[in-house]
Image (cartoon, rainbow, N blue to C red; front, side, top):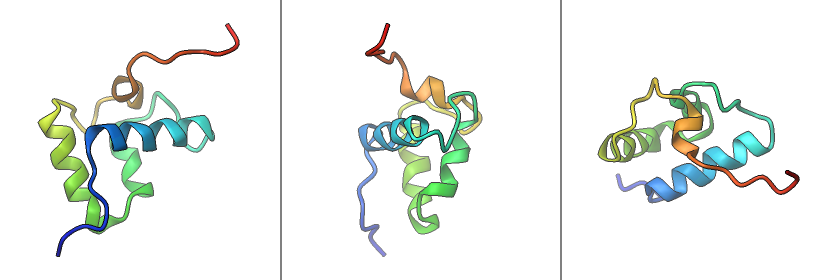
Length: 73
Protein backbone atom coordinates (compact mmCIF):
# COMPACT_ATOMS: atom_id res chain seq x y z
CA UNK A 1 0.00 0.00 0.00
CA UNK A 2 1.34 3.41 -0.98
CA UNK A 3 1.19 6.00 1.83
CA UNK A 4 -1.21 8.89 1.27
CA UNK A 5 1.42 11.48 2.21
CA UNK A 6 5.01 11.62 1.02
CA UNK A 7 7.17 12.42 4.03
CA UNK A 8 10.22 14.37 2.89
CA UNK A 9 12.60 15.63 5.56
CA UNK A 10 11.12 19.11 5.02
CA UNK A 11 7.58 17.86 5.71
CA UNK A 12 8.77 16.04 8.84
CA UNK A 13 10.52 19.17 10.10
CA UNK A 14 7.42 21.28 9.42
CA UNK A 15 5.23 18.79 11.30
CA UNK A 16 7.63 18.82 14.25
CA UNK A 17 7.86 22.62 14.21
CA UNK A 18 4.06 22.94 14.29
CA UNK A 19 3.74 20.48 17.19
CA UNK A 20 6.41 22.39 19.15
CA UNK A 21 4.80 25.75 18.35
CA UNK A 22 1.42 24.48 19.62
CA UNK A 23 3.08 23.19 22.79
CA UNK A 24 2.09 19.60 22.07
CA UNK A 25 5.68 18.32 22.16
CA UNK A 26 8.87 19.73 23.65
CA UNK A 27 12.07 20.46 21.75
CA UNK A 28 13.86 18.24 24.29
CA UNK A 29 11.79 15.12 23.62
CA UNK A 30 13.21 12.36 21.41
CA UNK A 31 12.21 12.36 17.75
CA UNK A 32 10.32 9.07 18.21
CA UNK A 33 7.72 11.08 20.18
CA UNK A 34 6.44 12.26 16.80
CA UNK A 35 5.15 8.75 16.03
CA UNK A 36 2.12 9.53 18.21
CA UNK A 37 1.07 12.24 15.73
CA UNK A 38 1.76 10.48 12.43
CA UNK A 39 -0.46 7.61 11.24
CA UNK A 40 1.18 4.30 12.15
CA UNK A 41 1.00 2.95 8.59
CA UNK A 42 3.05 5.99 7.45
CA UNK A 43 5.58 5.96 10.32
CA UNK A 44 7.82 3.46 8.47
CA UNK A 45 8.25 6.03 5.67
CA UNK A 46 9.09 8.71 8.24
CA UNK A 47 11.68 6.46 9.89
CA UNK A 48 13.31 5.73 6.53
CA UNK A 49 13.47 9.42 5.63
CA UNK A 50 14.97 10.28 9.02
CA UNK A 51 17.61 7.55 8.60
CA UNK A 52 18.44 8.80 5.07
CA UNK A 53 19.11 12.21 6.61
CA UNK A 54 21.25 10.85 9.47
CA UNK A 55 18.73 11.32 12.28
CA UNK A 56 18.27 8.73 15.00
CA UNK A 57 14.92 8.23 16.71
CA UNK A 58 16.59 8.92 20.05
CA UNK A 59 17.89 12.32 18.84
CA UNK A 60 16.08 15.33 20.27
CA UNK A 61 13.42 17.18 18.30
CA UNK A 62 15.57 20.32 18.58
CA UNK A 63 18.23 18.50 16.51
CA UNK A 64 15.62 17.95 13.81
CA UNK A 65 14.45 21.56 13.87
CA UNK A 66 17.93 23.04 13.72
CA UNK A 67 18.23 26.81 13.89
CA UNK A 68 15.01 28.65 14.65
CA UNK A 69 14.30 32.34 14.13
CA UNK A 70 12.66 34.14 17.03
CA UNK A 71 10.37 37.02 16.17
CA UNK A 72 10.34 38.68 19.59
CA UNK A 73 14.07 38.82 20.41
